Image 1 (tube, rainbow, N blue to C red):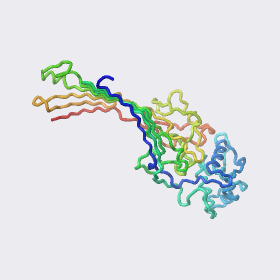
Image 2 (cartoon, rainbow, N blue to C red; image 1 turned 90 degrees about the horizontal axis):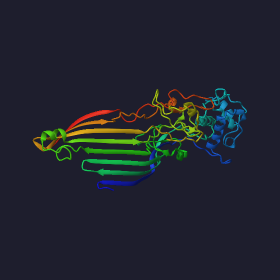
Image 3 (cartoon, rainbow, N blue to C red; image 1 turned 90 degrees about the vertical axis):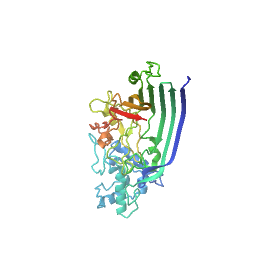
Image 4 (spheres, rainbow, N blue to C red; image 1 turned 30 degrees about the vertical axis):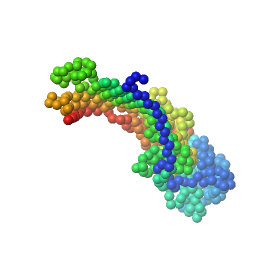
Length: 426
């Protein structure tokens, strides 16, 4: 390489274990039936799949998990409990009791007139059955009797970061150039800060029993990043290649000019994943993400009402119906959608004046422009239930996406800013 040029290529890796993360210390048990070997997540998923197919309760066959772990007269306990008063048909099996607590169908499909909860709200079904068992003096199966949920810090977090970084630096007499590129991938199961609290923060692991299912792209994962910077001392005036003069007045006008710039481009950050809008399949306090039934690609649009799914050729109704609600135990894929990428250019023009009474004293006048092109790529989308939540059985009920679904709510970075400044050195 030519003199003054430096090329560096490096690998950067980091592996984290035992990191601080929030989890539900009272998450409902994934209880296992010792006779059949079946656990709740498996049994509940069987029921959820039938519910999503709109199978009538009378057609639900008994599952050994429910027959072995719950009293045969569970329907009587539910009907006679003054805190529940279910009103279920007296011939329902324990399996049918669980199934009958959830609504199904809609639109042109038959509904469940006995339903307590909307769709795949299986943690509320677990809680309701446990209430009946507790009131009858029997041991509960899923809940700790004093808590529905309890978010707590634990040193259980995991992370991995791998990156290839390349830099080229060029040093000339009047010009300094830096060009950097990073190809990286950051993965974790909790991306929040230690100051995060509650259940909805990035630090929260939705299902601590299946923590690995929450492992995915970090909230701050950027796959490609390019930045470049340059400082050019313009070759005019005393001691320079052009218009070299000893005349102080001429040098004061022509000399001492500097142009600088910074360029940055990166691919988009992960967007909030669509989630069950008002049902709790896995965690009693936090909804699970919905699962796409096929490949889902974002199609951002800047016209009209800007949306993450709104560009030309983007069928927002088909995308909305292309998700299914979570099964018990599922948390859904995390951080698989991407926001638009980011690009920015900053420029600065400076003029340095040597003081006539001493060349050791200088006055520098600067004019800086941040975000020269006034580029404003859209950033986060609305996080409300109608903003990126998905309703019960969207395809079965032929639902349209809410009008505000996937709307952008803010831009990345800042609009164009001008700044002037002066610095006196002595």
